[in-house]
Length: 383
Ligand SMILES: *Cc1c(COP(=O)(O)O)cnc(C)c1O
Picture 1 (cartoon, rainbow, N blue to C red):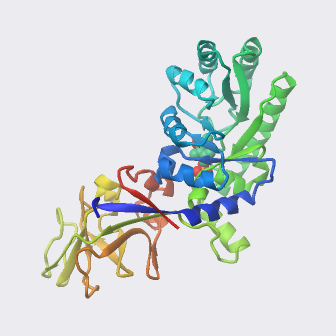
Picture 2 (picture 1 turned 135 degrees about the vertical axis):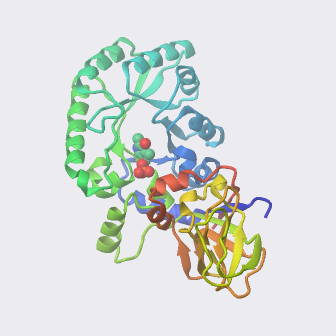
Picture 3 (picture 1 turned 180 degrees about the vertical axis):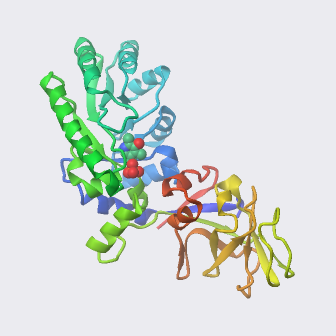
């Protein structure tokens, strides 16, 4: 092992999840795989070609930089959509490469027209509608201007989509808010249509929306977290697994994270381990170090809380997680030695360390933990 840890990506799990999610849409709905934030920490360059092999040809990213990475490796017939940040300069690049992008302010709409004139090709835009999330998007009053600008620049703009995002479809607490957003979206779509503008795709659904409110699928869905094998929330997980799938999780985790034992030694009873005084041995303790710390995405919040698997057994992280390493209590693993496999996330023997178990302990969401996994950790594709 040259690096201090590595990530394995399961191609069969990715396919399993895709096929499961595709059952929730009909043949008229296009599937867009969301690969923002380095494909939720999995790695854009690894995930994109794999999912292309399974027939997906639409990718959603947050920024122009991510779009550039995806564009470099995608096959010709793939479409890329930028859902967030794009500067005026990058707009020209996007137009040249047929990459569509969200527009949510009048200034950006005008900038898109300008960029299109410079490039000599229409900009493919998605009109983002404010339906109640109150983040980005045009409200009803601004739409009048949007319609005027579009009508006056017909040659510059191709209206690829009209879209919105839900403010927490993963929690039943937000039920009324989501229902109101769905209603507003349909009203504003009709309004735009009545004013002579006919976007190609109406799209609103993320993973949670698709799973809980299937009517939100419309012409295109933007699916991230569930395709990587995670439920958007525990609530949806319970609802689906228990009520519909007889306690069998239909989603499989794509990512495992592994390292190996760097050293083993024994510490007497009554000694502090690692920096500071947060862990005092209460017995003669065999400690093992693992060369992964917060500098590699293993949260410092997991000090004295995290677990890893060695020889198929769950052992505790003791003391503070350091920048480059952590210490685990290996007293109960009799024949542990340097070089033994350590699983930080994933399976070993009959045991599993899940990302959500971390999240419970350190109070951060699945999404957050995954996206903190550095891109410099090597990725290997396994079946
Ligand atoms: C991240 C994102 C998605 C995907 O959400 P998941 O919960 O990961 O499926 C969809 N739409 C927008 C606008 C997003 O930012």
